[in-house]
Length: 317
Length: 317
Image (cartoon, rainbow over all chains, first blue to last red; front, side, top):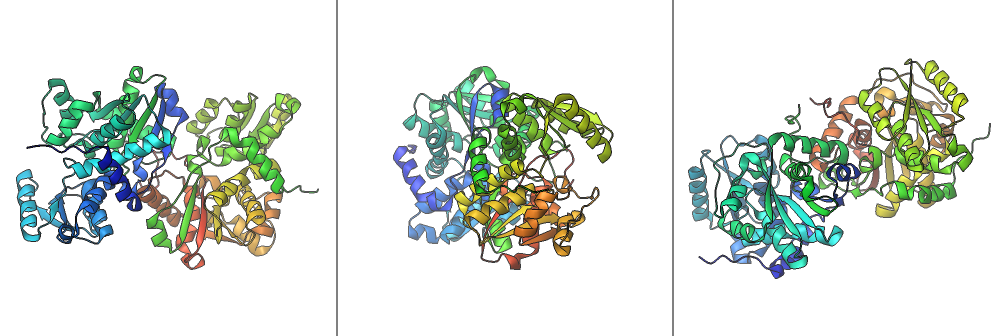
């Protein structure tokens, strides 16, 4: 099978396609975090993005890439997280149907949010086999196009627009740091910067408790993890074949953060920057604070991926 | 005694004077809050300001208004809140001494923050008489200039720059809403808009549990409150003679919010806008949501005053 990796034209097209539907999020700086890290940090605030995370970029690009005939049959995915939310919103914007397969027992907050955006939920047993079987049934019944949360060129091109804006507003950078889960965001980030600022080092930030990307890059072959246990719930997925291809070629290194470092970084940002970020976002800051020698006196772009947090269940309470 | 109320030249001068030392904070919008209120809201995010609150504007203007001889003797105030912090920072920027009189028992977090910015703390008994006596002793010993937190033309002119930026970035508005405690911010806001957009209605948002400004405006004479009990700790002060003069002449109305409405609005902003605001900021949103008929289909500017919150003591936990 030939993998069609997005090129810079795909990314530029994605930017025009999604522009009416997303925020151009601000880039913030913090004297305190600069002092603590010894670097000059620019934070791309995707926590302030529509639906609370960068995921709307890829989902919106995918939905608006469909021709009218395909669009009329809708889109579908299985996701209990931000991608299901983002896809529901994107489909709602275009006025087409989104079906989200969710395991029984997924949080009520998440399913309510999907419904708020007009997505249709189909529940199934909480196993990967059941999720895939249920999704297959949805497709057979509706003819919907499956939009994978990250292993999809349209999604990767959409996520790549985030680094494009960051580079335009605050670049060029010596290094850019973004979290890695399934690898859609870091892949898009790496592709954008390979085109615009090829000398930039690209670091993927990963929870040590979900270190499949780290082990993949160390060993030179794709390793997957089975339901890793980390507070960074957006980063529990493993790379797909397409994102692994890009990560292997373009990511400088994968840096790890402990659960304690993640929580400390999250709290630090709330207290000093006065913005709400989710644990997955904090991983990018945690790895910088843990390895300051890599970034000292450098200009560093940092992607804060999302801000969807349950305020009744904060990790320090 | 003649009260010298700042004019628009004072405000323009203040803006130039403080520009190098403060952030031009962003103005955010929220589809969710627009839908809930029926209005088009523009939020001026002073929670993202240096030292976490708008207070640096007034304190910095006051400190940089001093001539060199006076500056060499330093500045002083009594404040256990954001003004003490802001004055310490402003004095640190200019390289002069700030003395902050704080009552015994003030929070360790607050006093640590004052010290971080280089302010010198003098503790006293927690009564108003002791605070004033101690401040008088500091002045006698050092010759420091007293910078009152709000009843001071230099401070009011500094706070007025916030509405100036908001008007430039997102105005004109049908109405502007800002919290009221001692009245420095609402006075500056009213003076700025009287010059730039005189038709704009000016609403002061006040906790019902600390309704001295409301009662003052209703009765036509200045009423003060003694240690009112509200979660909005930045709004416990009463108006001074200078701020009362401006409020009486220029504020359209004072709108009240209950403690429950304040906490609900605070949580709503954290959850939906992904920014950390303190209870005092939330009062401005609470009054809009409680009286939507006043703002329906209108363009409304809202000042979110600060984001200094103890994450270990959140009102919904």
